[in-house]
Length: 109
Image (cartoon, one colour):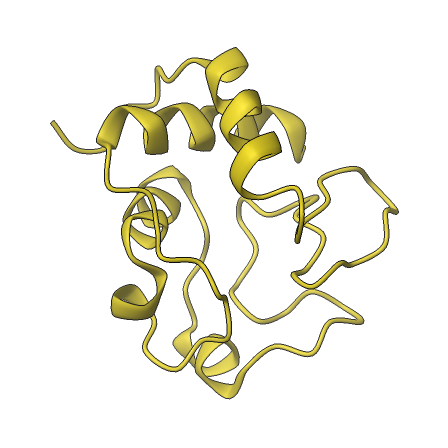
Protein backbone atom coordinates (compact mmCIF):
# COMPACT_ATOMS: atom_id res chain seq x y z
CA UNK A 1 0.00 0.00 0.00
CA UNK A 2 2.49 2.67 1.07
CA UNK A 3 1.84 6.33 1.68
CA UNK A 4 -1.70 7.50 0.94
CA UNK A 5 -2.47 11.21 1.26
CA UNK A 6 -6.14 10.40 1.88
CA UNK A 7 -5.73 9.38 5.52
CA UNK A 8 -8.46 9.92 8.10
CA UNK A 9 -7.72 13.14 10.03
CA UNK A 10 -10.05 12.23 12.92
CA UNK A 11 -8.45 8.82 13.44
CA UNK A 12 -5.02 10.45 13.11
CA UNK A 13 -5.97 12.92 15.86
CA UNK A 14 -6.80 9.99 18.14
CA UNK A 15 -3.44 8.36 17.36
CA UNK A 16 -1.64 11.64 18.05
CA UNK A 17 -3.36 11.99 21.43
CA UNK A 18 -2.47 8.41 22.40
CA UNK A 19 1.03 8.11 20.95
CA UNK A 20 2.57 11.55 20.36
CA UNK A 21 1.01 14.28 22.51
CA UNK A 22 2.99 13.34 25.62
CA UNK A 23 6.12 14.62 23.83
CA UNK A 24 4.97 16.91 20.98
CA UNK A 25 2.76 19.96 20.50
CA UNK A 26 1.28 21.12 17.17
CA UNK A 27 -0.09 24.59 17.88
CA UNK A 28 1.64 27.71 16.58
CA UNK A 29 3.74 29.25 19.33
CA UNK A 30 3.35 26.29 21.72
CA UNK A 31 6.35 25.28 23.77
CA UNK A 32 8.53 22.34 22.91
CA UNK A 33 8.03 19.25 25.03
CA UNK A 34 10.37 16.32 25.26
CA UNK A 35 10.10 16.48 21.47
CA UNK A 36 9.90 19.59 19.29
CA UNK A 37 6.75 21.56 18.53
CA UNK A 38 5.59 20.25 15.14
CA UNK A 39 3.87 23.41 13.88
CA UNK A 40 5.11 24.13 10.35
CA UNK A 41 6.59 20.62 10.02
CA UNK A 42 5.76 20.06 6.34
CA UNK A 43 8.42 21.58 4.11
CA UNK A 44 10.84 22.07 7.00
CA UNK A 45 14.28 20.45 7.05
CA UNK A 46 14.96 17.99 9.87
CA UNK A 47 16.75 19.37 12.91
CA UNK A 48 16.01 23.02 12.20
CA UNK A 49 13.23 23.98 14.63
CA UNK A 50 14.39 26.99 16.61
CA UNK A 51 14.90 26.47 20.33
CA UNK A 52 15.00 22.66 20.35
CA UNK A 53 18.12 20.58 20.98
CA UNK A 54 18.12 18.02 18.18
CA UNK A 55 20.52 15.11 17.92
CA UNK A 56 23.41 15.43 15.49
CA UNK A 57 21.78 12.66 13.44
CA UNK A 58 18.61 14.73 13.03
CA UNK A 59 20.55 17.89 12.17
CA UNK A 60 22.74 16.12 9.62
CA UNK A 61 19.99 14.06 7.96
CA UNK A 62 18.82 16.95 5.78
CA UNK A 63 15.34 15.45 5.34
CA UNK A 64 12.70 17.85 4.05
CA UNK A 65 9.52 16.66 5.73
CA UNK A 66 6.59 15.79 3.48
CA UNK A 67 3.89 13.15 3.74
CA UNK A 68 6.00 10.39 2.19
CA UNK A 69 9.08 11.01 4.36
CA UNK A 70 7.03 11.31 7.54
CA UNK A 71 5.16 8.09 6.67
CA UNK A 72 8.52 6.29 6.31
CA UNK A 73 9.97 7.86 9.46
CA UNK A 74 6.98 6.97 11.63
CA UNK A 75 7.30 3.26 10.80
CA UNK A 76 10.67 3.00 12.53
CA UNK A 77 12.37 6.31 13.47
CA UNK A 78 15.63 4.64 14.58
CA UNK A 79 15.99 2.77 11.29
CA UNK A 80 15.01 5.78 9.15
CA UNK A 81 17.38 8.13 11.00
CA UNK A 82 20.00 6.16 12.98
CA UNK A 83 21.21 8.06 16.03
CA UNK A 84 18.13 10.24 16.52
CA UNK A 85 16.94 10.75 20.10
CA UNK A 86 13.23 10.05 19.64
CA UNK A 87 12.24 7.31 22.09
CA UNK A 88 9.43 5.92 19.96
CA UNK A 89 9.40 2.44 18.43
CA UNK A 90 7.17 3.47 15.54
CA UNK A 91 3.78 2.61 14.05
CA UNK A 92 3.82 -0.60 12.04
CA UNK A 93 0.30 -0.33 10.58
CA UNK A 94 0.25 1.65 7.33
CA UNK A 95 -3.33 2.84 7.84
CA UNK A 96 -2.46 4.23 11.26
CA UNK A 97 0.57 6.06 9.84
CA UNK A 98 -1.44 7.47 6.92
CA UNK A 99 -4.10 8.72 9.34
CA UNK A 100 -1.47 10.31 11.60
CA UNK A 101 0.23 12.03 8.66
CA UNK A 102 -3.16 13.36 7.48
CA UNK A 103 -3.82 14.76 10.96
CA UNK A 104 -0.37 16.33 11.19
CA UNK A 105 -0.75 17.93 7.75
CA UNK A 106 -3.96 19.52 8.95
CA UNK A 107 -2.94 20.40 12.51
CA UNK A 108 0.54 21.82 11.86
CA UNK A 109 -0.17 24.32 9.09
